[in-house]
Image (tube, rainbow, N blue to C red; front, top):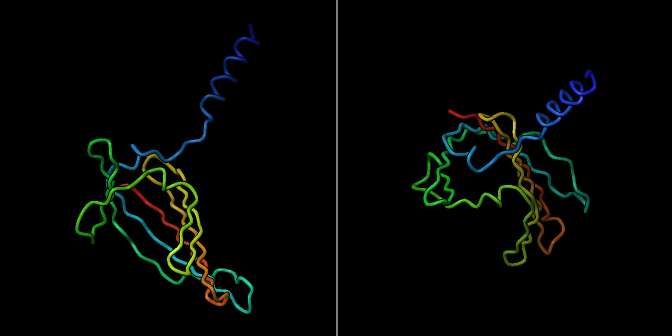
Length: 143
């Protein structure tokens, strides 16, 4: 009898231990986001560490859904922008002329009313001294 209760208790605990993730439905609403911005340049052909924070800001963001499509609206913008939720988590790379940009975005769940967004990218051009890394950390709280 003790074993049955113990196994039931272990099963209950393990099912409650699944990793929570930011979902599209969780994003719906208004958020206040603190943004930290860092840059690292290449010097003498060697990547440097990120410099101390070069920028900080507060951004108000609103996510909404219309016809099963996710939209994002920034307080200082003129309208809603279609947002592909899949693009908020994952890698990307593209080229503009001789500039190549590689990086990733990641959403991290904190609570149902709080999440982090991490964005990192590397920009390279034909000249190696033009290489630059960027990191943007955004901590958002529901308002």
